[in-house]
Each structure stands twice: as C-alpha cells, then as structure tokens.
Image (cartoon, rainbow, N blue to C red; front, side, top):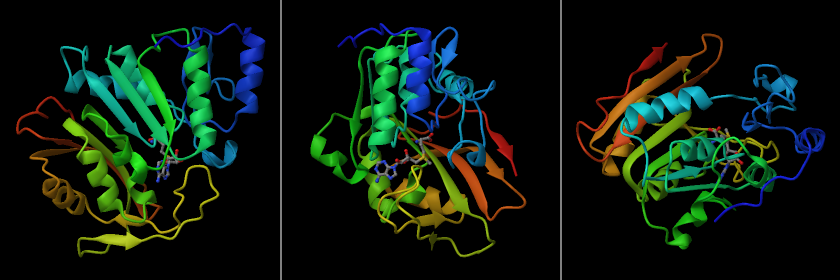
Length: 268
Ligand SMILES: C[S@@+](CC[C@H](N)C(=O)[O-])C[C@H]1O[C@@H](n2cnc3c(N)ncnc32)[C@H](O)[C@@H]1O
C-alpha cells in the first residue's frame, strides 16, 4: 500500500522532527534532510547530548551486512525488525527491494516516529512497510507467516524472560536471525544470564523491570542452537575497557554454510 506523500515544506519537516525528539535513528527523508542531521552534522550524538538517547547512523554498515547475506539482492524477501524503534532498518531493507518489511516496538514514541518517516520519506520506496505498537510477547497472536530475515537488536537484555522472547522471534525466522545484544562483562566465568533490574521510564529500556544480561557469546550460542539454528557467526564484538558491558552481534542461520559471506569485525 502506498503511503501518503509528504506535502510539507523543509521548514515544517524540521520543526516536526524537533518536536518528536529524542531520535535514536538517523533516517533520510529528502536528499538534504535526515532525522539525525537536524541535531548533529554527523547524525550521531551520545546520550548526554540527546536527552539520554544515543543518536546513531548505521545505514551504511547495515546495507553492507545485507549485501554479504544476500549478494543477489533481497527481491521477494521479507524482513521483520523486533523493537524497531523509529524503523530505520525497515526503511533501509526496503531500499534493497524487500517485498515486505514489518517493524514493531512497545513504545508509542518510537512508532509515531516510524509512521512520520513512512509519511515523509522521499528518497526511497516506502510501500510494503508497516509498523505496529506492540510488546514482543504479543507477537504470536498476530499469526504472521515466517520472515526470511529477522532482526533482534537491542531487545534481548530488556526482557523479563529473554529465552521465551528470542524463541518467539526464532519461530518466525525462515532463514537468518540477527541477535545484537549488550552483555555483562564483569568477568563471571560460569555461562549464564545476570540479573539486571531496569527502570521502565527511559525510552530505550524495557517495560517489565526485570531483565537479564548474557555473560558470554557461548551462552547465546547454546540458546540459539536449542532454537534450531545450525550455524552461528560472531560478526561484531565490542568491549569498552572502562565499562562492565560488552556488545555482540551474532548471525544465526537455519542452514550450515549459509553465513560463509559474513565478515567479522571483532574489536575486543
Ligand atoms: C536499545 S533500543 C534498540 C532499538 C533498535 N532495535 C536498534 O537496535 O537500534 C530498545 C528498544 O526496544 C524497545 N522495547 C523494549 N522492550 C520491548 C518489548 N517488550 N517489546 C517491544 N519493544 C520493546 C524499546 O522501546 C526500544 O525502542
């Protein structure tokens, strides 16, 4: 379904973008305007500079990953983004010609932004993209067909029962699931999940208070293997020496050999 095309002037768009702040995703609307560049020349800001929310601009990196996964393009493929925030990954997947892109997030703030971009983005097609304000745990009630590629980024460590949450996404994955998560890096050697109680007010947090941080990629491999993934690649691993957190991105595929094209970007 075509979305209504923007009839706003550049000034009106800028004013709307400011009114909808803070933004986490820098997404281009026109050749001269993106949601992030209204606030910063690079489309990037640290949380203290942006109402406690990091402003990120990951389009290029994401497109390189899609190219590695689907060198022949994504025509006819479907994409699901769990906890989609302002929907950046859905819009960029659509640039690669996916037949269907669906994003959902539990917070109205982010889904309002995603729908705003849907309405005003002029630099790429926005048909066949949909957004829903929804908790991950309500996803099974939708009875959707499985998606080729499922994105599970920045949500695992915000869930009271992350194994059930990830299983919900895994059961909707036909081909590849991307798991990007923060991890505990305090040096515990026993594989497991560490308790992390979080506030529910911050826009980037979970909504259930109870949450868990995995402490080793091996913990995540064991969980993903149990969910039926037969090949896994640690595509990125970043540790900040002054922080007790570590961030990993794991690609998990149903078929062995499927991830041969993924390049790793290991920084420890
Ligand atoms: C750290 S941000 C990650 C955003 C985005 N996935 C990304 O990687 O850029 C966490 C997101 O998860 C959403 N979220 C938290 N708990 C959720 C839940 N139970 N169901 C759906 N979305 C949730 C938040 O509203 C927020 O947008």
